[in-house]
Amino acid sequence: MFVEEVVRRQAGVISRAQARTGGMSDDQVDRRIADRHWRLVHRGVFLVRDRDFGAEARIRAAALVEITVPRTSGMRRGRGVRVRRRDLPAVDRVAMRGLALTDVPLTVLEAAVALGGVDRA
Image (cartoon, rainbow, N blue to C red; front, top):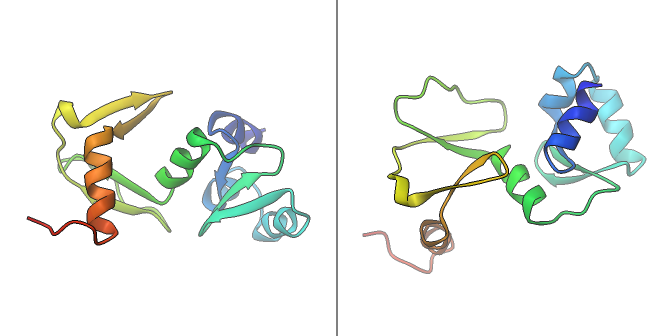
């Protein structure tokens, strides 16, 4: 039941770690991949076959790989998850379906920097 609830809540996306927490073995996860019930979208992150990899699923999958938390957060790095610690002003944050996200201007700027299109100032 846990795995199905996670998949429903996360737009069809689930991580291997979440599946393990839900009681699945690595063999069971690997079987779902081999049978094409799940497909790999990021290292250790999967999309259920009957779900579209739309905007919400993409964002949720990315959040299972890299997250930004306030500097004072006690959150620890999970396996396969990159944790960035920084404080963001309210103008740079938005919420979408229960997810806290960076707003479009900051996201575009950071993507441009990451892709080498902008020098870091």
